[in-house]
Image (cartoon, rainbow, N blue to C red; front, side, top):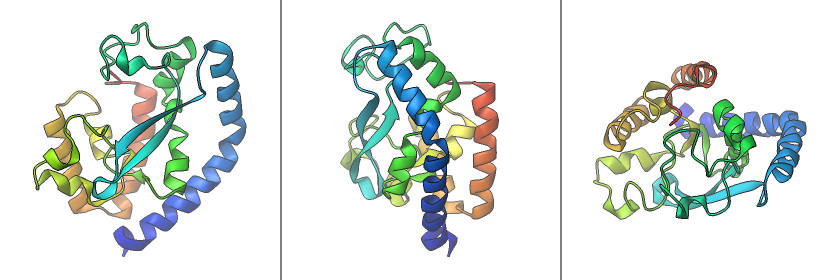
Length: 194
């Protein structure tokens, strides 16, 4: 019942309320981004969603335009990466760059809690995932998830996929609440960001 209906209803209501309440913060961040560096306010990137459907994730831009085509590409190893803007460093440390994904949740492309959506070509294209790995795509991807609070970026993709599958198998309201609370703690601890 929760997995099929209630989770989506809660996602929509909570994300809508959060977007309204946080709209002044959105505006302040948007203005600072524009003042800090040239380029768009938001960073849009194609990601794999539920059932492998492609959607555009929305984040506040934290890097120079076309950063993924420069230097280490998708990899950001440290905060001293010269592609990251001054305000970008702060947004990444505080995870405030993730806030616009609330719009993805309202649109039904994402959930508050679920497996993080990978880019369309890394670590694999959708059709290249093994059948057992595709289980992670049976639910909407999340702003945060079990792999995020357990290992964040300190584990390989294969390890993270196993944790994602564990989440899909065990989804419950209690589990989602625990993940959200642990996410808040992780944000303040700032471990394994890179």
